[in-house]
Image 1 (spheres, chains in turn orange, brown):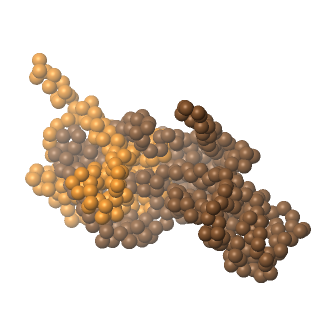
Image 2 (image 1 turned 120 degrees about the horizontal axis):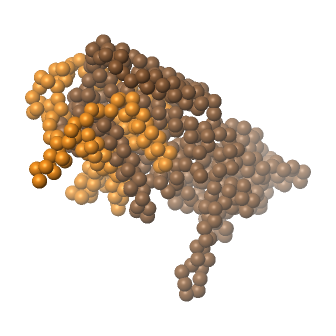
Image 3 (image 1 turned 30 degrees about the horizontal axis):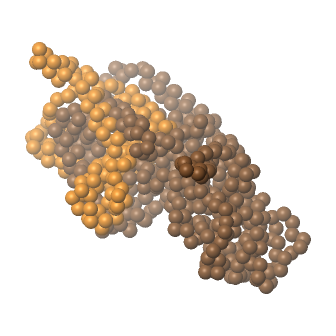
Length: 181
Length: 433
């Protein structure tokens, strides 16, 4: 009985991904509704630094007071999590999980190119995360907050960020091709 | 009803539904990313080797869909674009940050939100990317003081959209972006055919219909254009509360909602010279005195620190007024009497500039109030409406005594409080920042 339930939760038949244009259409409607109802777009990297600020603030509040970047989020009695982007962040985690569950894609595994080991992939994923979020905070937003949201509202700066992201990735792609091909 | 809804612009403990709403938006966001295949880093990285351009297709379909719908809603007058967050342009930190993100993308195989979709479905590399993200964001916070000046100022242009950059109507930009996206989709499919050995004949025919619909939507946005200033002015409302103290009970608070014309009629936006002067010494607000008279009048006499923007050129500075100043800025408009200042008020209010007031009785009333003992100024008996009511011996600008009243002499001033600060959302509170 229990194994059956386990099977039904974790071994659901894996379904194919939706067509990219359909996925984009739905994402566009979600983005529009976000703008229409709340005036804010989508994002997530802001939540990462807010959670960081919360951790720093709980360990060393005086450090926050000496750092202008953290001060804006967690200075004084400000709660760094008191921002719309935080529920969006946790919602996205939940939404990803729900889609994985519905489509039978909940599975502990490592997605990687065929010629590298799991360990190399883990190291690169971690490094990539460090680099990406460093850049995202510098640019004041990531692919969601800048490229997607700013792209749709025609923000001039966001289009620069978008092309810079693709430029950086295409520029380096040849040199790290062993990772993926 | 005017969107976005003011109560939903930010999360607040007073309205717990805001958390639910933003959580639901995030949920839909994560769901779509996962079902599009972005939980798998190979699908994302394939973009950069031309074998599969899912990233570009999803992203640009989303951008153009949201763009057409957003600017369509703006054109129809249901969505107030000035209340929609537009990422401010920081050219250099955006460019460098973007390039760094590109490096992180190809090395790590994810972007931040896709790593959430990946991690939550059990992908170990997605979890490690997420973990690395916390480290990267932390490192940025620690190193930002080293280049804080560059980060906050280099290539800063404020809220600027592509139509302003190119000087063409926003509908034209929408159409051009849609055409560019359709061309990119065609190019992407050709690349997939060549590099990814994909059979295009198996692609759904429906996508052609989608492309046509998108194009038609963009043409419609261009045709609709923007709502007129008058339409927008008529939609503006103001909220004022009145507190009536009660004996032995909680005071009664009445809330009134007024249209812009009612605010003028009830003279709720006319601030007395005393209040306008005292605003300078009020820590809570940051007054900006906008003098909308001609340059000649301004040169004859103006209040200290007043900025001259002749009425005819007011629309040029609106983008700056919307994006530049801190949220507690109060704009105090003045003409010689009130006629030109009221016209300016209507323009600014219709353009969604917050906290705009009019100097009651204009510069003439200011002089009557603060300059009654100033011998150099003689009344001009034949001045018409909105003309200077005084004769000046020389064009001394703000060097007459009454231009900058002595704060000690006028320390105690009685006035009726008209300025009610509306704090729109903090500039740093929007977007991903």
